[in-house]
Image 1: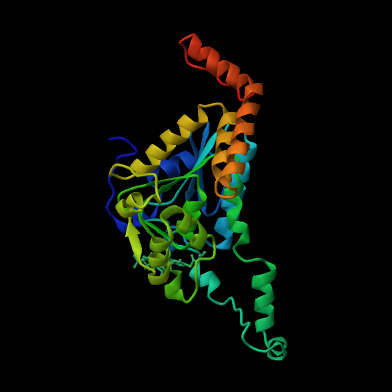
Image 2: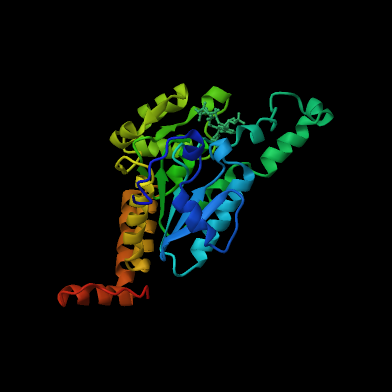
Length: 307
Ligand code: CAA
């Protein structure tokens, strides 16, 4: 039986990353407390969130380790793309509520009262640290990122998936922004990225009611690029294949394409088109462009050198 299709049923096993990921991760040199890191393809870094007892709730330690792994990937010339995944039961069930619950911010009370209470310390802590700001490291990656989502992707988990360039979902995936049930709102991009992805009316409905949607609904609404076949590990297997395909292309063109697509969120159409044209022109200065077009004319596969 393939490592990717082995079936497990117990809740403990569903919470944990599959055996093949744990085995691959043992071979990697860097050790993390909350992540498994592996190279299913020499050009692909697979980052697996590994806080099974808390359904991969995103606490400070986990976010810090994700950033360390992303830095490792960005600085390694062998790596062309990154897959981020969780367990079968949860991609990530949101920001760690237990870690957040005692953070206070009480702007409604008077300044006099604030400085007489401990609240001023909490306000300062949340405000000065710009709580959640640093979560967006993944959006600044130059190398493409793919979220492979099984199970819960709620709150910060959904936001983390939306920070990736591509989302693939297993049929078990559940997406939602339930923060309203906690008396807060999404704080890591949910109100903005979800609205861009699925439109105002649908985003409003999800954010204001806190209800979840299935993988199939997420696909129909354009939140994920597609739902991948059934079975444990299938979504990770597919994500790794997509990542390998991306990593096999000329990496300068890949990064230029990513930059141009992302610019469509920031720029007016005319400016975006100008940026695209300039990036397109600049690629004619690369060896990969010569190789790609020569290989086509010679009816052979290109060998890109990323130069
Ligand atoms: N933070 C901390 N712990 C969490 C967690 C979270 N977001 N989600 C789940 N857990 C913990 C539970 O407390 C529980 O721990 P214990 O065994 O120690 O009690 C363990 O994970 C398993 O969870 P459940 O027993 O609740 O499992 P379930 O199958 O009954 O329910 C669930 C699963 C529907 C995902 C439920 O756990 C849940 O609703 N979680 C919270 C989801 C949520 O509200 N996310 C948004 C967080 S706020 C946010 O993300 C803000 C932002 O914008 C960044």
